[in-house]
Length: 107
Image (cartoon, rainbow, N blue to C red; front, top):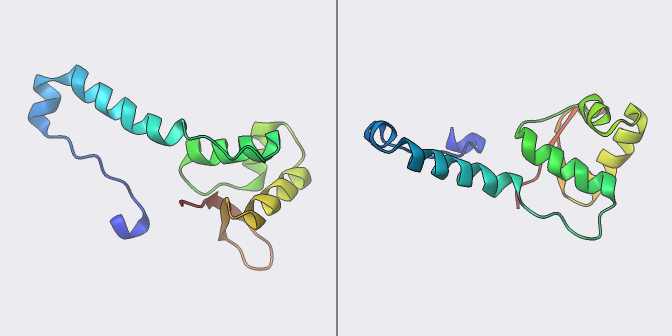
């Protein structure tokens, strides 16, 4: 799983049963690390929100999903995604001649 970029947070069963609030805080701070990352300042608001969307989703997504999130057309979402790929913020997760899904590039 680690080879597929999975990230593990090992928590012992006894810690969960004995200190549930502490484990909850640990999990929330772990998730917050990925959600609260800043985006580069030079990005437009659409590009910045695209990166935030990809960080929250944590899986490859289609242009139609982004279009629904941003309330824009699929064609406009594709243009935003192509710019994000050119800037090396995202990468094409599937598709050769027509890109199907995109994912966050982890730096």
